[in-house]
Length: 221
Image (cartoon, rainbow, N blue to C red; front, side, top):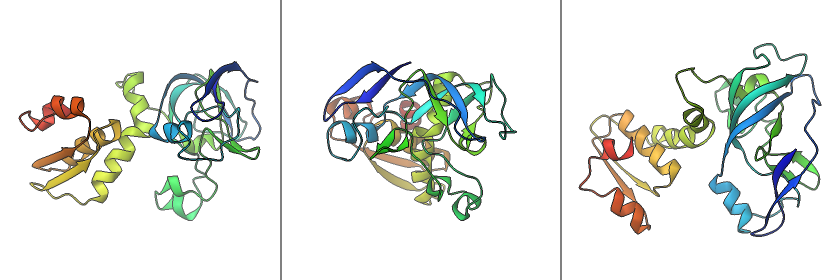
């Protein structure tokens, strides 16, 4: 299959790699429809985060269609449209039981292979998903593929930040950074009843297009 792989600092290669295969009864193989580029991918690309093996398939924000399932996956079917969390979760450890699935004790992050150990990413035609029954979710049919893609990382990360800030109805908050996650944090703040949301960003274009003279809810949503 075709894939985008890490080829060194500020080098990404478009190449052919082996198709993923079922390795465990709880695996799934997903045909990727959409995969976003995360800021975390850029950290690796620019060398701000090191250790990734050359040849690692990048990408951890994706959605697609299940084309193959391990024999023990019982809540999903071949042909299901699914969106993935950015990391896998077992569903059984303390953190998973507490709803903190990104802290799962058996977690693997898609697109991170170091010293030959890890999980290939989803900037490819297909991706293997371990612990599929807890890692994959079926988005509502009313959501488009593009909207569903937001659920796995961008929206959930921004919304979690707003929720962690314990914003009260009628309150005020400030968000530093107006990239995709910052915008989703603003949406989360407004959904929790914030009256005023101040967004701070160094980009003139972002600041100019989302200025204080605009209606914040309309501009962000």
